Amino acid sequence: MTSNPPGAASRHARLDLDGFLLLDKPAGMTSFRAVARAKAALRTRKAGHAGTLDPLATGLLVIGLGRATRLLGYVADKDKQYVATIRLGEATTTDDAEGTPVGATVDATGLTRHAVEAAMSRYVGEIDQVPSAVSAIKIDGQRAYKRVREGQDVDLKARRVTVTRFELVSLTAQAPFADLEVVVDCSAGTYIRALARDLGRDLGVGGHVTRLRRTRIGGFSVAEAVPLEAVTPDKAQDMVALAGHIAELVEVDAVTAGAVAHGRAVARRLPGDLAALVHAGRLLALYRPDPADPELARPVVVVAEEVAPAARPGPRVVAIGNFDGVHEGHQAILQAARTAAGDGTVVALTFWPHPLSILRPEKAPALLCGIEDRVELLKAAGADEVSIVTFTPELGAWSPERFVEAVLVPLRPTAVVVGQNFRFGAGAEADGHQMRTLAGGRFDVTVLPMLCDDGPVSSSRVRKAVAAGDVARAAQMLGRWFRYSGLVVHGNRRGHTLGFPTANITVAPGAACLPDAVYAGYLVHGADRWPAAISVGSNPTFDGIERRVEAHAIGRTDLELYGERVGVDFVAHLRPQSRFASPEELIAQLTRDVAATRRIIGGR
Image 1 (cartoon, rainbow, N blue to C red):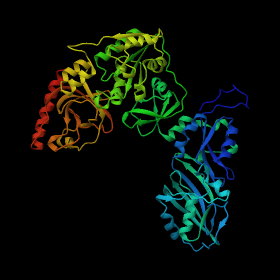
Image 2 (cartoon, rainbow, N blue to C red; image 1 turned 180 degrees about the vertical axis):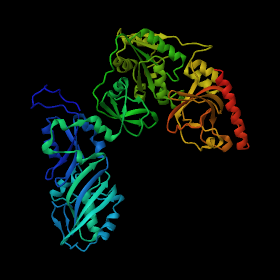
Image 3 (tube, rainbow, N blue to C red; image 1 turned 90 degrees about the horizontal axis):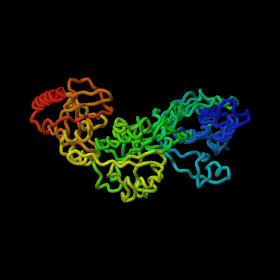
Image 4 (tube, rainbow, N blue to C red; image 1 turned 135 degrees about the vertical axis):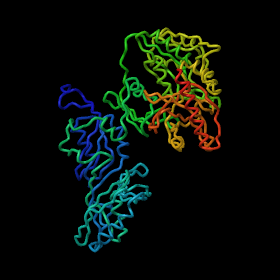
């Protein structure tokens, strides 16, 4: 929670609160009025609630304060729990005790617990429910309950909701009524009054709610809530605590925090479908995985104010490129930037997805690494920060002038380093020399010649070497072994059965990988690195279909890496893929592959 510092204002001054309050709403008051009262007690400017409670209802109301109001929709979508009293024997116009009775009162005292529970059981699970006519649902911009109060007929459509618990706690007969004390666990959008109405209808006696109390929303309990008369600013809680009930908290560094505050995509594999990004105890935003690339996360709600990375003294030099593979030519650009920056800051500016995949998809190259690996490699090559520019058709149509002003200038460079083949602007019309002119003296631009090694070192030449299975040539241009990375997936466990368990990675469409064959190399997981016999292909002996990289860590049968991200480094080609007549023949060959790998890796 943030607010004005103590003593900074008088007790009558407004506070800038960013957080939330759990309120135990009293009966006889609308949710709107309850929020207004709490807002006045908190002396804050902005507040809202997650999930309306009618005046009849009491219980948990989650109130968002300041920027936390942007998160309330995610709270309102959580499942809820209610305790209620349902009176059988009479229906009302509002399906609760505030309405006018409809029809004659029916004696419900003869209903047995068994009959009631049997009827209630029909409302457990996914059901189609017609909301109460006096609900807050809008019809042509007006709330349904307002139309009813004006004497209008309301026809609401059934909606699919889920009731996971509809439990009868007690049944009390008071002629001519039968009062049911019930507990309901349900999805957002479920109306307890509609359950009472429909239950009474099914039992032939009519029904309505006389008491309703919300006791839980998601992980929040009414036991944690404060009554309205006890609301004070110190009862408000921090946004991080609110976010922790919505999504898993993910801590990010200062550089990533700066990108998040600007609403940029970041290279981060999230632990689930939604994550709350946090830095230094502050909530920054809610992010989701990019549907097309799980290694990239995109914002859905940004609540942070701009977070600037800690300033470092000295120059700020930006190195620009696609940097696919971060080969030795790219590393030379980073090294030149580091030389220019000295003890200052080197920012690697890269683009994702690859511009050709947007501008000319049929020409899009197979990528040497994903964005997460690219960021790690750029930092290993000398970058202090990595700025990922999301490439879009609109960006591809920008003029060179707009690119400089909108992309480069906000990075505050004192100098920029590019390779001689770097192009930017619509139609790739501008190069580094034109960038220097457009800079107008605000920053210098260095254009490096391409690094050559019996030809220019380029990502396209590395891809050709990889596609040809030339492990040594690819390694020479990369300055390291070619690595294929991904999440370990479940296989059919044949390797485990044969005595050669493997970590399996699916070869993703659009990713560069070596041809089908058997290789010697390493399996890498975090700081661990094991010599490995590696198979690339679809497992022809067992009529496999899906193409995978399967790495057997030599001497290790105890590794459990499912769901973990690993890398496979390719050191040498051993043999082509082969189909074997029997498992015994395959085992014999795998034994020879392991021995060959030991000889190759052991000599390095």
